[in-house]
Image 1 (tube, rainbow, N blue to C red):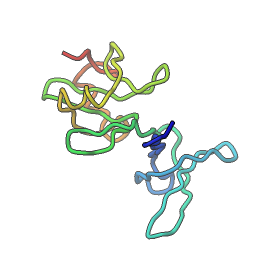
Image 2: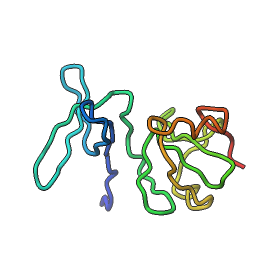
Image 3: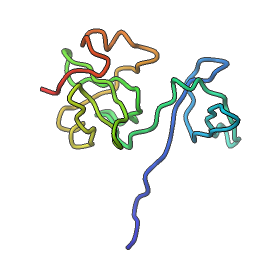
Image 4: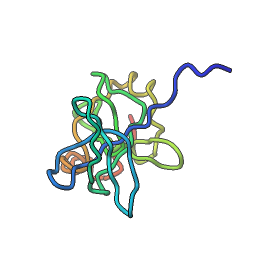
Length: 134
């Protein structure tokens, strides 16, 4: 059996010193979390704020943006959805619908923020796990 495409394991987290987002490989070391990233051909290992770490879902929004755990996505002006990891897969909505590329394409989801930088996006839905699709 030939494997044509391996899953991309990438993470993002906020740099503990600067508060800026960094993207790359997650490292657990001495009880802390780091993201190893490559900038201009050099490897950097950056200490990140643990609460901000989110994994890449393997899915892309309608504009090609990578969707990460903790992102807030929207398909119209009425509802925003928080992307969470639950029971072995990435989900959205209070009914915990599995996030798939087919679902994203069908509804035309777009990343509009994340729970760390723009938590008020979820207040409009009155639910930190978002509302049902519909």
